[in-house]
Image 1 (cartoon, rainbow over the protein chains, first blue to last red):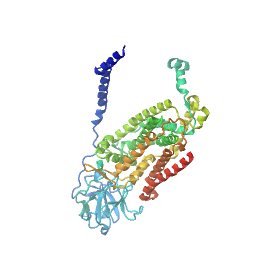
Image 2: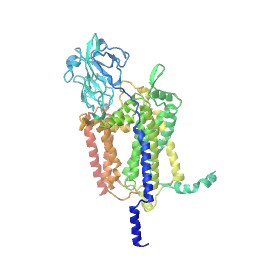
Image 3: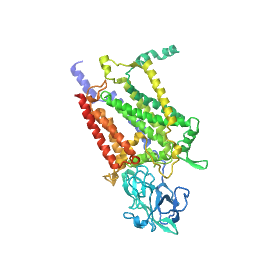
Image 4: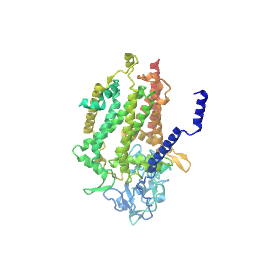
Amino acid sequence: MSEKDKKSIEEESKSCITRRSIIKGLIGTAGVGVFAGLTLPFGTIKNTSGKKKRQKIAKGDKLVFAVGDKANQIIKVDDLPLHKGTLAYPKGKEEHHNLILLFHSPVNNFQEPTKMDFITKNGFAAYSAICTHMGCTVEWYPHKQFSFDFPHLFCPCHQSVFDIFHGAKVLAGPAPRPLPQLPIMISDNIIVAAGDFNGPIGPQPGGK
Amino acid sequence: MYKWLNERLDLERFKEKYLSKVFPVHPTYFFGEIALFSFVILVLTGVYLLFSYTPSSQLITVNGKKLPMAYHSILVINSQPFGLIVRYVHHWAAHLMIAALMLHMARVFFSGAFKKPREINWVIGMVLFTLAILAGFTGYSLPFDALSTVATGIGFEIANSIPYIGNAIAKFVFAGTFPSPGSIPRLYMYHIFLVPLLLLATIGIHMVIMVKQKHTQPKENKEITKGTKILGIPMYPQQISLMIFVFLFTTSVLFFLASVLPVHNVEFFGPPTLQTPMVKPDWYLLWIFGIIKLIPGSWNIPLPGGVVINPEVIGGLIIPSIIMGFVTVAPFLSKSKEAVHYWEPLEHKPVASSIGMAIIVMLVALSITGYQAELNIPLWVCRIFVLTLPTVTFLIALSLTKKGKA
């Protein structure tokens, strides 16, 4: 075969469709199809919905103990002496994101940015108990801890510390926002909500 | 019997080809084997646990108490004659596998074996390591006690905090907002099927490439063999005897640890409650926990659409990924283009060795930060240490290794 023939054959094979290129194309198409067939179903998986939308806390919702011997009982003013705190729920709306940390402290210690009209005259205040960092449950911590020798709200997961007298602002730790405050009032010697939390509860998806 | 099999399977040829593979001898070569044997023990003990475990967070009433089914099934396992010790061996084997992998990585790194021509196996090794950590993470979610629900919940929140797509990803991975009824079955599937399957495949590829490329050897072997052959013992019978010894020894150590040092006592933590117990992740994730604690809450990088890159994402994902990614691409950052077949002394690569030591010091400093509150060290001290100690280590190591070269 002369040099010229070789060249012309090569050129011909470039311009026309060869058997090899057809097979390659078919395998490629089949490959894409099979890959799509095997992966697309994953995109349509239905996830069991864990939670419905949170029921908002409304004015007049009574607070009940969330833990302890008196769990599910309505919290009376006398149940919580000075310097005590507890986890509570709004009655009938006992879901995780409605978890409340209710505490009783000397009323004169509260200062801005605490919403002063959200606390009661005798020093009851309530905040969301869901840490704004990673959603762990914040504790009422009346003891000395680190350099804080006064009561504070404490998250056991990453040791964030919230200031109970200054609107639960973050004193230490990685929490990005203060805990949302819950307006409360006293009616007939029991503690009731006066509305919903004043901010989004817990960590926010997508870093919002 | 052998004759019968040989006539059909040509065992002689197999023996010649594979059982005569030469293994260089050095104690540090056993780290990889210990990791492999830990995996074998994990599979064996795991099968035992599967016979009794119920992958469901649904509540059932047992003796008047409402308990999640998964939690209750762990109590059942604990009450079986050998249940508790098999569970503890499973847990200890997971710790040992990850520890052995870390030591194995350190040996491969500091001896220069990660460089050309073994870049591929280094990257595969990093994938294997990540999978082992994922197996550990999905594993400790399964008992569904107070500790594991909090730990897994934090994993969910880290994924959830990724800008834009985080919520979709977290819900896909955890089958809805954790803990939803689908979460435990989903995590169970990862733990007993998906992750071990990928681990098995990765281990297989890692082994085949290792056999194909052969081991690196201690430096002194070069003088003996004049750089032509591999000096060591053959697979059969010497290396196999050693492997059997290592396997038996590993297993007995695990049983010893399991009998004297109980881990993850679910009854101590109890079923999930509203209150969060003081939780710490397992030691191999403590460094990420340290980073999360160190990032100030004010670090928010705004993105379009009112979304921010928040401290959780920076501390829980971005920085750990940068560190892991940096280690993964280490062989490609190396400037030397010569193939490494013998252990390199540290002074042959002063920068790489010093960076390696600095990273180890940083991981230790970060892990200590995880216990900052308990040790009563203020956060700002930790921040300074985490930044300065690795730098100082790097500089000292660099001057020492450079001196060694001169």
